[in-house]
Length: 341
Ligand SMILES: Nc1ncnc2c1ncn2[C@@H]1O[C@H](COP(=O)(O)OP(=O)(O)OP(=O)(O)O)[C@@H](O)[C@H]1O
Image (cartoon, rainbow, N blue to C red; front, top):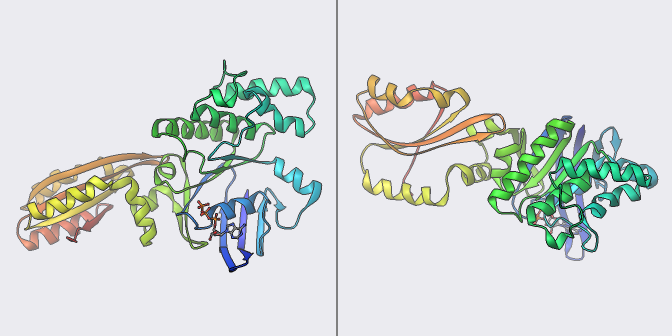
């Protein structure tokens, strides 16, 4: 559905050139939920604007649904844009219009007759769960409801692609989850392709099929979400994964554990899919002459199965510990021996 080939975007500014997107290659399949994660300034928004033709690439090719977004203009570009819906962090609603009127707006622009418009708006209100709020103004809605209006409006012209620009960053965790659930529901019901940009790994974990990590305009790592969680390669990816697997308090707890357990080894185990269900600790205790202390553990669900992180302390003879580590590595479990900082 989307193919970027060697795409570069350079802005010419008074202070010099800024390379916001640097030789990016990317393919997003139809019906996929694809996440792009990066810190502020990484180039995510620029990439999204290239996808809907708001910016032209300096070089390279941006193909969306067969259209070369960098080359087309005028009515052809406007038509191509109708196939691409977009939602925003701050919703971008029209404050003087009701929910119904906001959702109808893109239909008016597309010249859809009034009766058909009303029918479509009713369908959309139902799709995003805003029944009963049709005549409210945006100022009378909660953040989550505002984003539901944003989603309904983005879907009004039945686009094939939905672009989400930090769509949940202004929402509290619970509302974030309900909006993410809605996006998955829409993706499944309508077969819509979704590309989202975010700086929160929680969003990627919860709904994405694949993820690309962006840094300094480049995609530095890309893969299936579960695999990236299991084995992040780049330092920046490891930092993002830790947003989910290792909250701040865990770091403090681990520092404390090094004081508490000066001998033996502190080990982080990462399990994915079926390996989350095996009785690994029992096997360790039975097969190796070790004392195993479970220090902390967590299992999280992704869109494609579970992964778990477990911190354990192993005590015993050095060679027994080494054999135990080798054994675990054979069990599709990622093993990281923690070093004190
Ligand atoms: N119109 C512009 N003119 C000049 N420089 C720009 C322009 N838009 C973005 N940039 C620069 O390009 C780089 C990438 O910005 P971009 O907004 O794409 O990153 P981002 O990852 O989306 O960050 P954020 O989440 O903060 O928006 C930054 O250095 C930014 O200052």
